[in-house]
Amino acid sequence: MKIKIIIIFFLLSHVVFSQLDYKKFIGEKSKITFDKEYSYTNIYDYKINASKEDSIIIRKLRSSIPEGLLTDLYVKNLSNNKKDSISFEIIMSSRLLIDIKNERICFIKYKTRLNNTVSKDLIFKATEIAENWKELTDSSVEVKLLEQIVLSTNVNTLFLFYDTNDNPEYSEINKLKPLVKDVNGALNIEKLAEVIQQNKIVLSKYLE
Image (cartoon, rainbow, N blue to C red; front, side, top):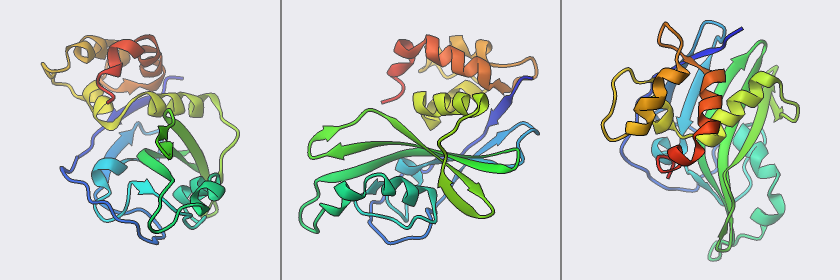
């Protein structure tokens, strides 16, 4: 069965950095709507939308949210940070929330920075069951496809693939668009994941 996605989102033009003790990330959120198979979806760009919270994490957050579970993985590194000496950071990129069957799945794309060494892009997955979040360690084929897409793209690139209008500044994506859409114009995540994988070099300049 084909899985289709339609992406619609609105971007802000500013970033304000702060380090607060917050229960959840807030701010203007981008909108993403998958087909009727999914009852809820949302994509969030930390770098653009984190106008009231922080897209760079430097200390442990509460484990009641996915971002807090992510910091659980780096407790030792984060505990070494001092007010006037920051040696470790988690650099947040984007987050996809999606309901698959009876579970809400969260994909967080991020990097880490230890002193002056920055990691490659990483993905953290969490699942919410009965209003409680926990790290997701098992992945279905569907989850793996979504993980691959989130890891290999950014919010702007996803929108460019979705947009029915071609942007002359993104000629390579304009050429690839017909390969990832079904006849009704909806994005197909199986096709999208395959095209992204096959065109990594071409698309890399749009992911900076």
